[in-house]
Length: 337
Image (cartoon, rainbow, N blue to C red; front, side, top):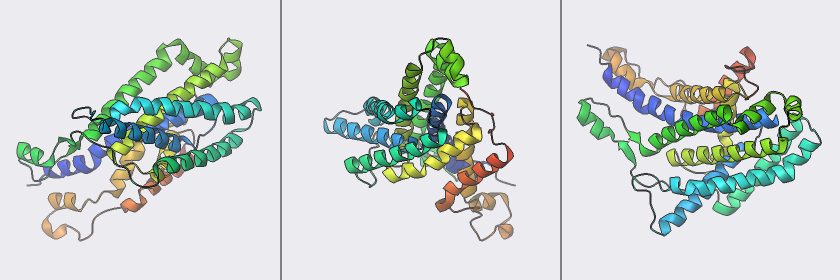
């Protein structure tokens, strides 16, 4: 008789659960990129470094709290330090806009110019981060490490394969869910959110309606700073914090935004999960799954892995190219909030 439960547990442990956490992190990052594009009409290549900066400040705050004996019980102490990271990241966003992007906005520079300027800002923030915290891995995760351990799952179900759910994964999914719900409520139910949507849809008509463009831009950067801090911190908790990683993370984040439909928040969320699950499914070794489903003599010797994990970011690139060739506007054809 074919054993279906053990391979299902394997896939849940190595694909489904990590995919939900990773997809949530990419969705939050892509929402920040989408928001800037929807309001300011340019691709912000500095967003990955904004995530890194927010995570860095949160880490420094976490260490300070830990040194004073302050913790958050079974949850990561970083959740207590995250508001500090949000405030300083928002400040960085507003200062950058005031002294860099605003000049080009007044000059009505082209989107390409904005994009090039954002690359310069990216290197500036990157250098600042490495100067403050260094280039190495930093650990800041504490509290209870697992919601469910593999051994406990085996004892509970009687299966040979375990299912482990890390606390950081649970916190990531729940935090992302709450933030997304709040963001959609803000954009659709509040006067400020409706003003942002109107400005994104038609800037000239919004100005004729009396909407203050500087206020819209300021709110957009504030939300972007919050999203960047949360996404960066959650990624650092779930994986590890290393400044260079966030430069690499820029590709799957932009791929998520473009695949879903750049400028469309729903598309950013959908794109994040599409990219996350695609990376994990392509790089997962299916040999053990095949051993449960196939007769012993038919199980191949190889790992049954389509692509090595070293090349997982190339999956994002391939999906991005395919979407741009087949449907350039993305799944949800978005260009406005």
